[in-house]
Image 1 (cartoon, helix red, strand yellow):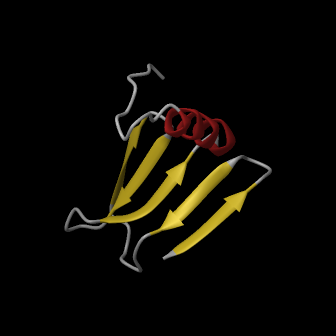
Image 2 (tube, rainbow, N blue to C red):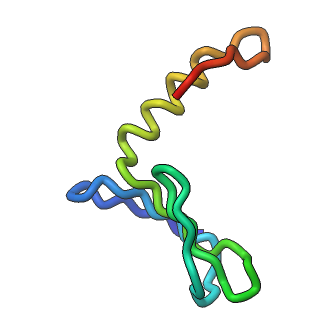
Length: 72
């Protein structure tokens, strides 16, 4: 697994495997690249600084091991 961050475009890239990318699907700020077999190969997080900031806020709302519902 390789992780890289491009500060100029604010994209966090996580290479999950060395498989060949066949297609990609976008889900909000995420672009997931899949192999021909449908296995994830690469994950791109767009606007990564904002995405990670929101994840941090959510994790800080965890109380007594229960997630407090929040809307993103």
